[in-house]
Length: 254
Length: 157
Image (cartoon, rainbow over the protein chains, first blue to last red):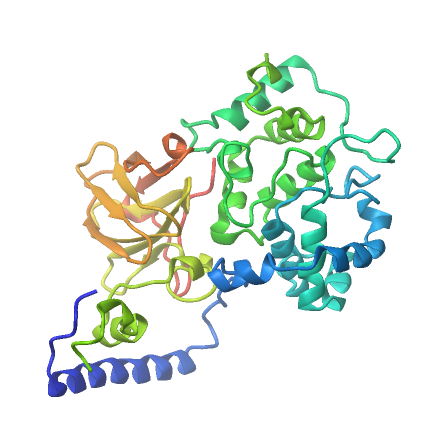
């Protein structure tokens, strides 16, 4: 932050001092390019101001027209009839946008979604995202949706509620609600309150064995790896039965 | 013209590059540079010392468990992806303040093998109290011989 006080000669010396090591490093990199493993990049999305603006400036009406193509799997109201397919209604714009970008760049693997995401233009992605984020999340008996599954037993609820509210400090597991809501959100993090349980469970397993690796800075891979398998099931059952949408529900577990 | 220029109007990345500063872009750590995820963990240097690279983020240290040999100088390089954190190691007086945009450095040396708990000592948000991780110090012989490009971390239990 300080203003540079160096004189012209000094800055030339500094410039040369920066350029020569760079040239050496470049030569070295070219020489040993064969045996060094390549960099792993989880996702090309950076949450800069420009990205956030591009992801949240879609036209929801055009998105509504485009969304006719998504209805078959993601449901007419953004709630999927199959429990293994994610619900998109009311999801944060940045969260859906990031996943579509990762499908396009093959950072998240999916045989179904990759060609669909590749066929969409940048504007269409923003429009779809704008539409789905504005859909209401309340129940509709006439809609064919898998969403609230039956509630798990009391012990499972207790395990899940404890992890969602407090995490596990001893093992270094942060509480789910500190990023996935309702307590706080981070950019690009999906809300789980109206998500299908089976989908959540599959994603947690995929994060745990790193077959899904598009989380920035290894955050979900680390957390899913720290959870036991029964805890991953408990969390999925808890969210999948709609209990997570009751804000501050201490009675959810007790 | 120069007196009329405010300090925040100067092209900071160019200055940082010219002066060789420890500047990193907190939003783009995962895309390129020193803190991409394949470069995190402990790296064995030619002189036998170990360089550890780590990211502190809400509410996690990545990698979650660090593997270092005992009795060897450890050069720690930490940066933050979002808020101000600090990295405190239990049983030692090491507390490294970590702020986004800068790389914090510390020189450590663990005299004996063992497990050290670590925690964040700077309130960083709703999950701050659960932001804990581990340093696993192994005898020098048990530390794996890492080839160039390889990074060591301990497996998550």
